[in-house]
Image (cartoon, rainbow, N blue to C red):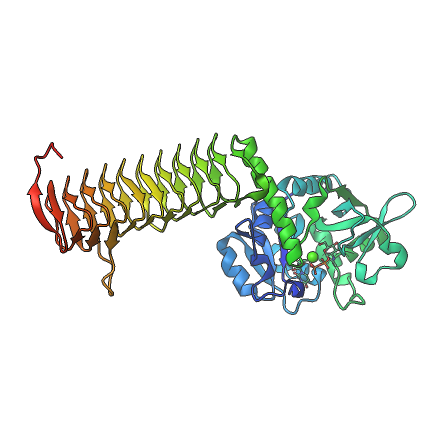
Length: 451
Ligand code: UD1
Ligand code: CA
């Protein structure tokens, strides 16, 4: 049974009170709609058809090639939205799976269970339900005395008796395609002024056809995002899922409640995460690292056996056995080679620090290439900006930069070069030479082996 998948995302979502499309709001670092897309994509060899309307171009731009798009304008309800997919799917698929873009917690397993149920259904339609005392405004499942589904009644039009029903419509359906295209035009306008997709159920029943239900294993999956409180609720569920996943993969998380790991982060075994840590974007962290407390790492690659404490690391690369912090700031293009020690109150931007280099206290290194085994004394600054452009600094292997040295770029320090405390280096220092003063001048040359 060839399946097509539909994701409805055309609604205006007034309750979000937002200038950006609701489904592009982020959850654990990714747009809400990405979750549904990821769950449905493996189920079909055709890209999902996303129905967009209000701010549809922005949604289309965000998803690009991964989906096909149908435009719904004006938005006349969920049945009208599904009808817009007919030109893209008719004749190509035998069944369609209909999902809502604002339900990011639904799992692939749940969707598969629904698909399986419909495969074995002689009737045209299967749907997911769950029971809860908190109706969340969901449609109610009306059954007859034999327990057979008769209809879904929307809260807006339900009688008081129907409102007390606790079995609710999740909003996910698997429907036989030919029957769907025949039946959609027969849905009539509701009192609310919309064409309700949920009316399919009553129409099937009227024809004497079987409607199957599958019950949701975990009601949490039914959380839909209609306003910001729902967004926070879903965020909490995702956070718990992500943290549990990594703990089961061998990561120690001291306090999952205060650990914020986004969906695309990867963590190696035996890494320990201390509280109040934020791991974001496409961050990869190796094995046996210690991260946090109070650390934010975004879009960075961290090797194994690294320690990062009370620090901010953005778009940086740390090789193995690097230790950073407390209060360090690594910015875009910082690359710390194996065994680098970067202590407190340092900032590194667009710079390479070679293996074993030490930068203990209060330094700024920007646009620099620093060799191996260099000692960067307390308070060293690369004066990389001349008011117009950023200039490079180069420091050779084994150099020793005295405390409070200003390296006025562009400037080069040769291998084994040294500066005295407080030197303001405006000219290159040859290898194995010591320069002191303001402006710095060379006063001594060392033997290459000595110091
Ligand atoms: C819908 C269901 C309800 C179910 C609930 C679960 C209907 C009529 N009701 O109600 O039974 O319990 O979901 O979340 O289907 N959309 C469009 N075009 C439109 C209208 C909506 O694409 O014209 C999209 C929305 O963007 C959203 C989805 O369809 O992704 C659901 O629409 P929404 O208005 O949120 O439906 P509910 O009132 O929540
Ligand atoms: Ca909804």
